Structure formats: C-alpha cells, structure tokens
Image (cartoon, rainbow, N blue to C red; front, side):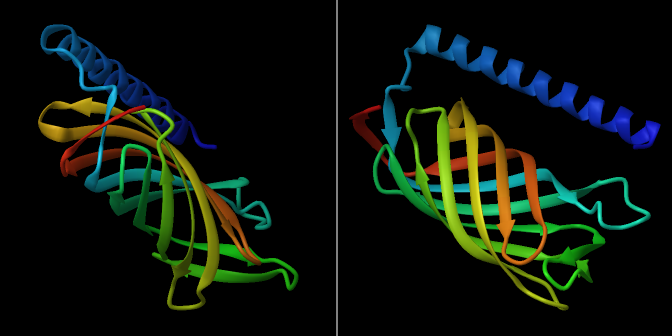
Length: 198
C-alpha cells in the first residue's frame, strides 16, 4: 500500500471519528435540554445518501496488492412498518474500473462502474442500530452477478428528522468476488411517530 493511500485512509478515519463525536455530543445536549424521543420508534419512509468505500479482494492478480479500495455512492429507500421492522431498496455504484476473478474457471472479468440493487429486510433492535439482510444483483455491461447482502448501521439523530449514520455491509457475490463496504450515510425520515417503546 502506498504512503499516500495510508495517509488518506488514516485521515478519513480521523474525520469520521470526529463526525461521530460531534454528532453524539449534539444529540446528548439536545436530549438534556429538550427531553428525548429515543425510546420511541418511527414508522414511515427513510431516504438515504451513502458515501462509502468498497474493499474488494483482488489478490489473484500479479499486479494487485491484495485489496482494491473503490469509491462508492449509494441511494437507499426504506419503509418502516413500525419501530422495529422495515423493508427497503438499496442501490450503489462503484466508481472505478477493475478486474475480478470468477470462481471455478479462474477467468478474469472486467468490471466498469457496476451498480448493485438489493431488496432488504431491516430490523432495529433499538433506536440506534439497524440490522439488514437481502438479496439482489450487481448489474454491469460485461456480466451480472447475483448477491446476498448483509449489514449493520449505527445512526445518530440530528435536528428536523435528519440522521447521520455509519454503515458496514458485506456483499457475497455468487460464483465470484465478495466485498465489504464502509460508508457514511445521511438520512431524512418522513413519517409519523410511533409510540412503541424499543
């Protein structure tokens, strides 16, 4: 891994850590002054923009360093039936051209800005954490791959029904490479308050 990439990754981690601490402090201050709504869930719609990096194993290539880091943008739509359960459509695009290996045949396949689309089931064990799992497809002009996606998101409430989230997802692509994605999510909640305690 090059020195520039190491500096970039360390800087990104420090910036994300600073955002988490600042948002957490803001939420704690808001709860202390105005009371908290954290024991109440929210049913309704949630729209999310995700800025992330995908980590792809490309160790099969002689020129590769083992892990390929690809900038990724995502757009998610979720609908929560109640304080705990929801469904969603999650999409993302990887903003790079790269090669992966197809399992079995060991054939190298070029990927150019693939787009992932997955139907997700969401479960919130409490007001901050969301567990998710679903099935979808990664669409790309050379070849499409089916995938199983799992993930977790930690959300921090912001004023006016906005939320800052940090997500970690794993995509298991059938018959080819798998990948992890770590991202920062900005969400807007639209819906009515639900009085169910969680």
